[in-house]
Image 1 (spheres, rainbow, N blue to C red):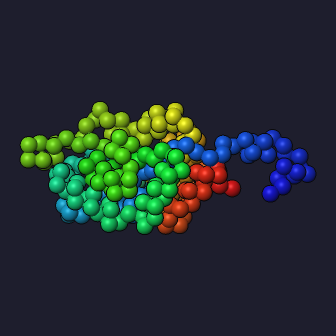
Image 2: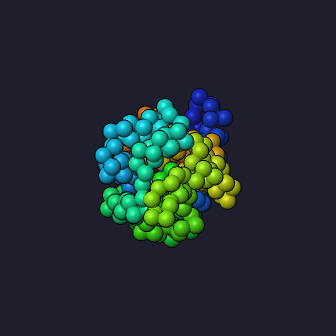
Image 3: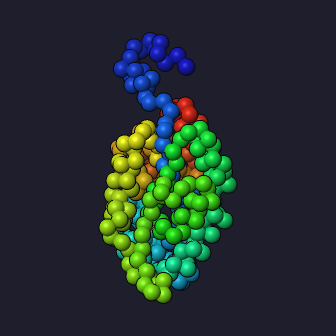
Length: 238
Ligand SMILES: [Mg+2]
């Protein structure tokens, strides 16, 4: 491309483009509807026969119409997942994973990139998928739920930043201090991280959310995470 010789002389614009950071050190993925094709909480709701109510709440949150912490509380009260159900969900995450998720993560790690998962999903389930994909437990940031003696649901751990509406943003702010960071996610809570990461990649391979599509630095619509490899290596996709 010969943008630098653009006769319109829009040098400032060229300069901004050319100095855009090239290559990234850290790749952070959302979980539900990004690494896996399902929304975990919707599946749990189906188990309990509350899918319609829960799905409506999930959609409202993902499209930015409801505070995450409010929706979290309301959904969990409807679903009350047991530990056993979360382990089952972990298996569902794997079964419904993006077919190239494991390969993409392996190649990122081979190339010396750090890989994290930051999600509003529930820890017990997400860790099962993370292990399968080769992401260490300490690189997984997920919601913690409290369980009783019989592994029955008691409530969320509200001290976990991810139980708050700007939780992902706070975690990403910390992670991105370690290096140039990309965040890949499908939802409105993912989009909230845009100003604290170096590149926000909206993932529309599973679900296209208009607010994310309009505001992402880059938006992917195919059902594949492979384009991430190119972006990470070469910098911003043009
Ligand atoms: Mg998601």
